[in-house]
Image 1 (cartoon, helix red, strand yellow):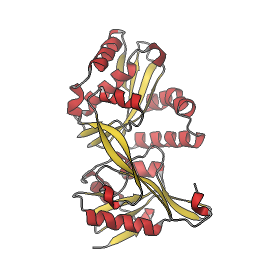
Image 2 (cartoon, rainbow, N blue to C red):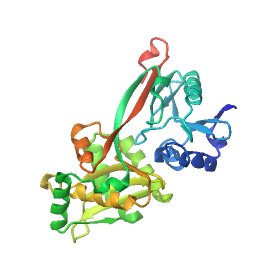
Image 3 (cartoon, rainbow, N blue to C red):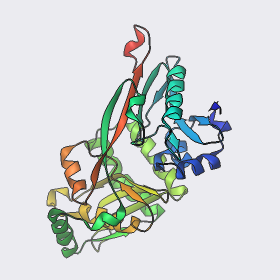
Length: 299
């Protein structure tokens, strides 16, 4: 069995996507359409005839090729239908051979002992069928929101991009403090996912059709993820984002196997996700720096 390094143009993207969807973690972030948007020149390691695969999201700086985690893209790594630690270790060894500097995140199916330098991160997940397991606070907020006349709808392409530009992009820039280049990349990602039928945008609004909360979700038919969201009425404590999330969970109940809230490192956000019955799921951050001094502090 051979482990091959493939340049972007050499990757059979149909075989790639089939391998992802039939893997033990059919992650939306690892699909070719998603990767093409966040890292257009991504390469890959492929074992046998796509029996096991790993995207290589690489870049170059000061002549140094390095592996990095693109914005809005957690949990990549090695994907295969049946987890084989020996094959996984083969991939990790090859990556360490190819790159002197590595800073990536690997999904929860990875075996942690494969890594010499790891940290754990957490996201919150649930099976959509568990969406009825709301705590009292979530129920109260949803009831309050619906009682105020707010409803939730799925926006069409033009509406989604328009209101995202009005609500979500300023939130990314001013509240989260992302650089303009990252916000621009997010816009590219939105457009690409919309074009390929992977983006679902839910908005809570009054009768004036102006959203008070908006959220993007990505789904490949098996794995649905809350990508990003924001609300304009947070000061009013209306519970509008509770209603958006609840309606999205009901929608994806019939279209995917499980739902990922896309994070939860911050305690208050984790508490919000727990209110829908979500449970923590640990994944791994892998960092390796084999650069010589003085390049050791390369960023």
